[in-house]
Image 1: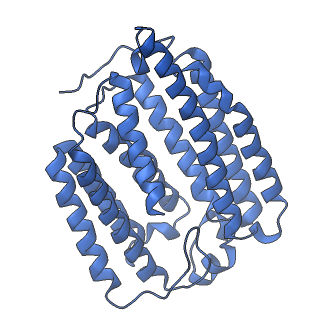
Image 2 (image 1 turned 45 degrees about the vertical axis):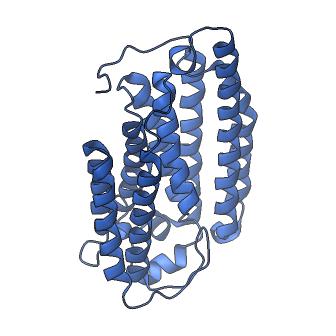
Amino acid sequence: MLPWLWGLLGLGVTYGYWERAANLERAWTLPAVAAAWACLHAGTMWLNAARDQDSGEILFGSGEAPPPPAPAWGYAALALSAGLAALISPWVGLFCTLCAILAVLYSHPSVALKAHPIGGPLVNVLGYGLLTPAAGIAVALGPIHGRVLVTLALLATTMLGLTFAAQAWQEDEDRERGDRTLVATHGARVTLWSARLLIGSAGLMALAAIAWGWYPRAMLVALPGLLLVDRFMARWLRQEGGGDATWGRDLVRLMAATALVASLAAVVQYGIAWRSLQPFAGQGTARVPTPWVLPP
């Protein structure tokens, strides 16, 4: 899953520079922040594997029994990630440290928020949906205003939907471990309906923000992709027992393709405005929010 995590981080960086309509003047930070989040992800996965001790289906890759040193490796990787991130900037270091703390709370046997019906999704939303893209925005020294908050809300809502979707085929495993995840307590159908409603809500919020003029209106070309995602979720709901991990992988790929189409449309609009010597990127949308906090 590391490429997807780097994608979230890169999305934050790109969006931060897009907001400012600025050049990539801090390129030296990109390898460091990528390394920090690679360590963060490795530590998170090692602790998670040590806690679960299973070899069932997972979203990406194959399930393997974790080696005995996995917990020690996990804590070392998380500490290294926080140290690397702190070298980039205090804000990036803070966001990475908070992610590392969430990783421990998620998988530590005495807390194990991943087994909690609210705690598990909350950790994923905060870590993947908010703190990771916010760290990318901080790398780019992006401003803070209403559009930034809407963007983070869209990512958080999408991540919550994906969190539930990733549980759909794990009903039996979660129940055997005694976990109280949504799929263990209410079954695959309720879990998939929750995922469908959340992902659909994020899509509707995005369309409303585009129509309002906070994002390039050329991004409306992604509407067919959003409809395809919803139809895919409808087909998934008809699968017995929540289907299997291939459904989750295909959902992520379809959503990524839809996001790529929207991003390419924004790039085209950016290029047209730039060549026409018009305001471009985040300063060239139909409506430009007034920053509450400017970058240092």
